[in-house]
Every structure is written in structure tokens, then in C-alpha cells.
Image (tube, rainbow, N blue to C red):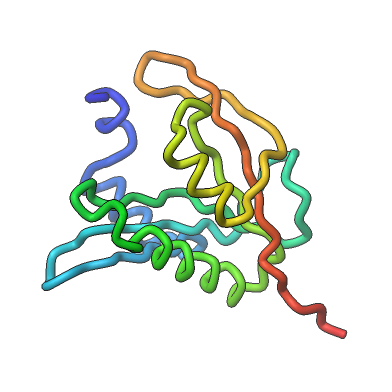
Length: 141
């Protein structure tokens, strides 16, 4: 966990992410305290994703003491609206195959598994499932 966090989180890393115009960071807060965040990559896909204009739900985290209060659903609603406003027709994500809580949450929202990919977590190699959801972008016609 320490190696994973050192490689993926930190002031400089998050500053680069915030400055990246293709990555939208959404923050949920309560009483001035950050309680959740989500990130949407507006130009990202893997081969198994069937989209003309895909976006990726890159991250979605909610503090554990806020689980079960609808925060994740609200963050997802905002992430989908962000992708849709950018012209995306589908949003995809990668989730660890053993993360039952997340898999259940995404399936309830209509995400379907379309493939898998390796994921390095520290020094371990895991398998992520790739899931996607049609976000119903109207055609230009």
C-alpha cells in the first residue's frame, strides 16, 4: 500500500492532475471538509471499450465514514454529467476483480464488464475488470 500510494498520490502528482485539461477532478465536501472525490479522463479508452467518444471514470473515492449516505451516487451523477457535457457517448472504469462492494455499486448503476486488464498494486500484479456504461449522448442529427 505504501509503494502504491507513493507512486500515485502526493502533492506534485495531484497538482499535475489538476492542471491537466483532459482530467476533471470533482470534490465533494461537507462543512468545508473534503469527503469524496472523483476524476474523469475526457480522452481515454482501452481496446475493449466500444465508444466513439469515451471518457474514463479514473477515480471515485468516498471517506468510509460517509459510505451508505448517497455520496458515491452523487459523485457518479456529477462524473457522468461531466463526461456527457464533454460529448462522451460512454464512460468506462477499471475496478479490482475482488472489490465486491465497488462491483455491486457499478452494476446497480448499469455498468457492464467488457474486458479485463492487469493492474500493478505496489509490487503485486492484480487483475482489474473493465466496465462501461452508455451515457446516452444525443446524436448531432
